[in-house]
Image (tube, rainbow, N blue to C red):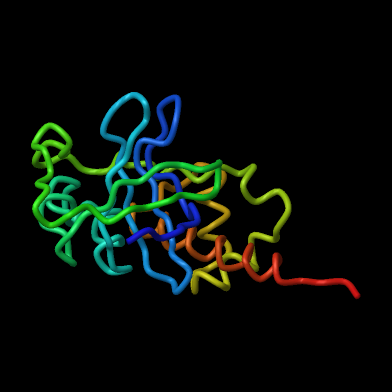
Length: 172
């Protein structure tokens, strides 16, 4: 079975995407991992909750790929920068241990909020979307305070929601 996916978010990048999230046509998510330098990828279906746990370092990469939520893996190839083609691997084919991340390997922690991310939007609008005090977000941006990983993700998700609403604007 082949499915077409759209790249949603790159989580690790070194010369090319090492780990990224892609979405199928009905909203299902796949976590895609580079397994060699060609690059070739494997992917597993991942729920929003489990992806959030991965981002918050509540679960390691090894667990996500070694024990997928839905039994089964996909072979993935990038068809262009935003599109991915995934082919279901036969159940008889096992995942090679050298493809799996090491146990206790977590996503890199990137709590820094970059002010340039907010040049085109009002900080107050993003703070309101995130359900937080605008002054606190300004303090994060200026470096006066450092957000926790959870707060940084909360702001990131709010900024993405604002950006998606901007994309929906159409001029007739």
